[in-house]
Image (cartoon, rainbow, N blue to C red; front, top):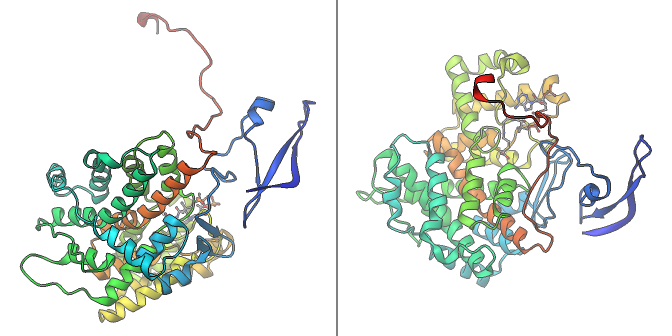
Length: 436
Ligand code: CMC
């Protein structure tokens, strides 16, 4: 971050002296005005609920140009990563800043693979949940509980602890998600199979049973791997900011990531893929493609409270580049499974077409986001709707941990402590209970 020659001047209409604020430039994207000394110099706070104009940190991991619809991990376009790399190469990139060479990749794959099992006690912890518990409730608990099992990697200020907790989290998330699924299905857990790829092993733990051999379908393996790549990081979104804020207190990495899982659960964030598929199924039940116009009218009627799930984004004011890749994967998976005429896919395409031509969506620059098609792919793979957000959490774990480790290593890092505009009662006295 370089200070520019340009400075911002803040002046006041009440005659208070104006102040100059430094402006910094990143490598690409908008410059930032440094307001850190604003309170000390003026006694004023800034007000920005929802962080619409606030850069909460400096980061070198992910860049989004929302107007262009561009997403880069460490400078590499998402389209190139999704078509030329696999998920573990992408993890290496996000964590260490470079794509591994052949030797580096083999070493990284080996270390992640060595950590895929979870402590055998975890299954007893899992048993405390009801069979119908939502997988995200289970995941919030299981990820937080990891800190009770891996005491040798809980010191966030120790670089070796940070490194090993990162590997453990990336390696164990698929195992935990698959365990949550098997538990709800009443099936025995399947141990990880380290001869398989990261995505292949996940499919194995999800769909194999001890009774029969299971062969991983390479089309589904590749599709799942792509889902993981597309969800791996996304700059300072709500869950990543949650992880940073939680980790800024010095708590252990497992607790910080559990906070990210909890945040991701919401329907405005990671829960949108589940909400989107539920929406498509509801429209299908109402009559399918023929009901799209009626549904869009409901969405446009603000009093209905209905949103077109899988549409819109805080940052993208253009087509989400992940949605394009996901749509491509959707076609591949459906055709590999002989489901080219899948009614939900047809419905999604019809919804997209009408929405993209409608003034309401055009004026507000609302485009499909990654979640619009990801649910259809996951459903075709055989993943139950309630597990979609847990898959998102699995994939986003590497982004969370890379951002957390970047924050701890940043000399400018401080505990996160926003201020407020207080609008409550001014000081008053407590009256005796009989007089209140
Ligand atoms: N359907 C209908 N109207 C919408 C939608 C939608 N999906 N999204 C935004 N709008 C309207 C919104 O009502 C507002 O209208 P007006 O200006 O008349 O008040 C305008 O568009 C601007 O929206 P906003 O709510 O101010 O935008 P935001 O940046 O605060 O919210 C969002 C972004 C993603 C929460 C929102 O677009 C949304 O709720 N989308 C549906 C949920 C969804 O698909 N979320 C997944 C996001 S991508 C995955 C991830 O990164 O988590």
